[in-house]
Image 1 (spheres, one colour):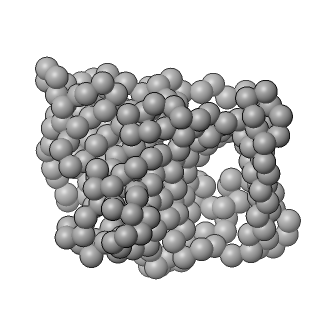
Image 2 (spheres, rainbow, N blue to C red):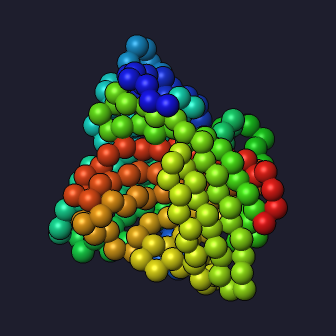
Length: 275
């Protein structure tokens, strides 16, 4: 179903208001932790169409390392929010000799999960930062590290797709079946009228689909990205979050064959059967 509406982006931003305690975890391509920094992100509405965000970064002993403040009165062109507060922002065009990537945010009750995926000037995937947060005094229980076994089974859900021009909103049903066959996994994806089957080799906490890699991370997180971003055919960047054993969210940032950003898709799915 397609609707010609203008999503209320500002209300999506306001869903993120609060004091978010967490950590910024910078990792290399093998998932090795390079830095794990406690953080406090405070987002508050100051009035109509004005939001203040203060990011505080701490040393391991909880002494303040640095602080950054932002006053937000408008939203950037490369940023889209969903009604529940989930968002994606980042590069609008893949280009040679330029850094490329994006930030993704998912939100559920009093928890947030964010991931920053970055490519170097040669368009090679180079590094990522995992950000796990909860509202101060929220009492949230963090998700465990994501495993292959946790993904096995049948997942059914709904996708909401926002076009980058902010006017087109499309919804459609999804179905994902993930099975394990020896040292590989096989998945069948149905999204609206689209259907595809693919398989990957299980390499530790990584699923190797060839030119595309899936990394299974702490906090129930995952990321999907091509090892090299190339112009010539459509591609996407994606993060996922296993919120509960039977509940998962995914958000994708979509690009066409010219390397142009076309929009963002949020998928909410529940496990309906075992693998």
